Image (cartoon, helix red, strand yellow):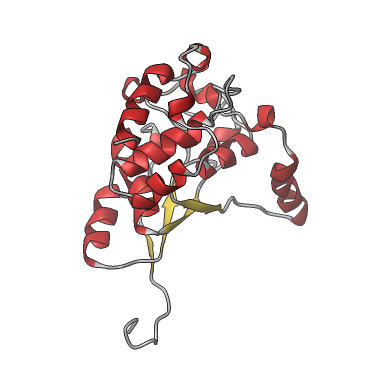
Length: 226
């Protein structure tokens, strides 16, 4: 029906990475609705299907294949906003949750629940929030061991003394390694990239996830400059 022009676009909604990959192997889809938040990504909740790396592969594949992700359940049904209900015993703000989702490869939009116009207005104030208010690096304190040493593009390492957008450089590198040629092109248009790193260690000392970014910049530079 799509070939005939009857169907313009095909979307998919699923909670399971293995199912998503199986369908994407056979069908050219345009968008994916997927539940993303720190609880699900780190194995907590009814829809926390897939390990950390399995879920990350979904994000990267969607970015590579041009499939836009629309996020559902960004607050884990509201649990992440309440310390008493959160599986981590700590509350996040709606804005931290939204930023967490938007930083994932492939994500184009986030659809939080709202029950009134005032709640919608409050959510839209995301665009007026400071970087400090959007910083979700606190999740490192309850991330599982398998997440340690992996960049989640939170940019808590900023500012880089020479102006490298370390989170974006990491994102392009991760995408390039799964075959996204556009990521390499985007990387090469950056004003500053891994080749500009002076190994000062500022980012290493600030990364809440224990990523040795100065070493990673050397790795990225070697890969991207092949």
